[in-house]
Amino acid sequence: MKHIQLIASDIDGTLLLNGVKTLDPEIFKLIHELHEKGIVFMAASGREYKNLRNLFAPVADDIAYLCLNGCLTFYHDECISKEIMDTTIARKLITIIQNDPNAEVLVSGEKTCYITPKNQSYYEHLTNTVKNHVTIVDDLLNITEPYTKISAYFKNGVNENYQYYTDMFDKDITVQIGGKCWLDCAPKDVNKSTGFLKLLSYLNIPAENTVMFGDNDNDKQILQACGYPIAMETAVPSIYKLFPNHVNTVNEAIKTFLINQKKL
Image (cartoon, rainbow, N blue to C red; front, side):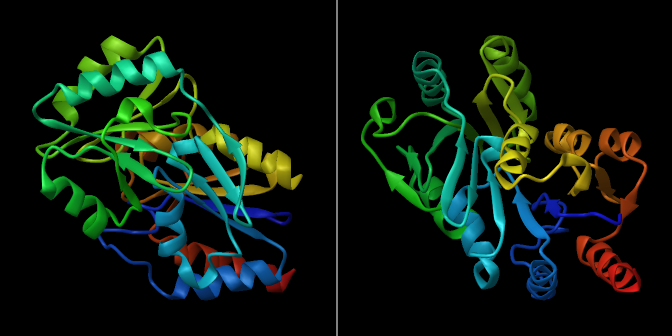
């Protein structure tokens, strides 16, 4: 790893392990050290932009952001790339989720997410637990910006619903499980590698000069796209087996990298 210019990491299950909600402050020190060496740190997540900025508040202006599983990328608070879902397909998807008594809809925008909650507890979950910037609207079929990622929230778990939505929409959109309770739907063929490669092009960084840490199936394409893919020891079996380099924590891996850089 002699010519690393960018280090990217998934968040939930990778930087945040065992259900922890806040980052270990040590990562901010490590990001500062990377920044001083001219190495970009990228948060690569299914989360919203403002959610990620809040999570990385001490270094918020120093890192790059890959949000909504590749639908949006930001650098220095500028939107670098944005993937748009076909409006007709998006509205059909929203309507089906709204008609499901066990599901809630979340429509992601650039700097907020839109909901029409069936239950107050869903709004409270998004604001207090997920910590999204939330905008309540009367009609999700007529929001004021293009559709990017649309998510369905199943309080009792998403797994049994995945196949239904895949069978219905797989030709038109990308459907992925985004966690125990979330089903994430993005424009067709959009995944984390989509935004990753566009941001690398903007920064003029070759993919072979990058590192990515991940743990779940929605990290597969970006791990394949980077120069040095690293899976977590706690990764799902499919990712653990596909990528032979494993670490216990991102912090320890970055510290080892920085120590080795000093020896060069």
